Image (cartoon, rainbow, N blue to C red; front, side, top):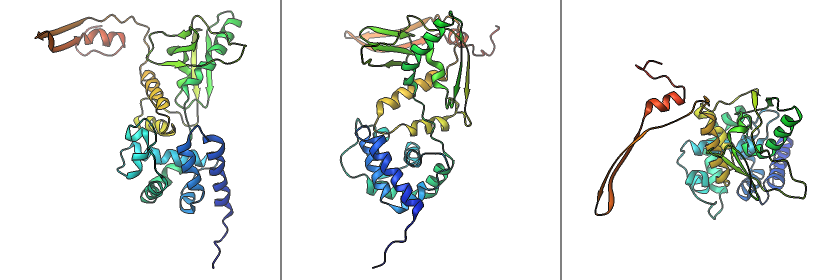
Length: 296
């Protein structure tokens, strides 16, 4: 019987996938843990992951690359196992490895291209729940001087927009913009509680530094950020989408007063027709958008 030829680089890579499954996934992400263990025992899949550039996490990149291709609309049986693609509340029962292996074999070239050029740039804007008390404390110690924020490794720069979000720390403690479409929840533990500010500390400047910055207006970059969110965490994905939508709107500081016209027709005690129209000129002025044919 011929013994397989030892391949130290792939064996080391296999151990990385096992550590990823045990230490980073565990009970938090059992779907990815199962896939990572399956990859660790598959030389062909490990050979794809081996194209990851130095300094990047091969497990995260390979799994994100597969997720990215599925989010593009790839028609394959594997999509049925991804709640983010199949619009499910949870991962369905069954063994995903046969479909995963088949998918990787069918898309080997595309996966190698993604893992060899992609970067793990996961944005976790909910970290702002921890940053806010710290920012408020710094502003207080500085006598209310506006903050100048510099984030190294900013990726999409979503944490720099901390003052545009709403926060719920439980027990009636809230902070931030009460009208924001993005609201983070945070559970406080222990006897020592962070100082939750009554108002937002002022910000004078925001600078994000990254070797490969991501723009919220780039649809391909946004899909890659979405692919980095593990598919069994739909709430995280939905929150990221809300934050990205907010990041694409540049605040102008202008007051937005809108006028609506509603056309309604009732028949038999029920609404049979309803159309609502708003004034687009007022919306454009509030957003500081150009209006063709209208003097400033």
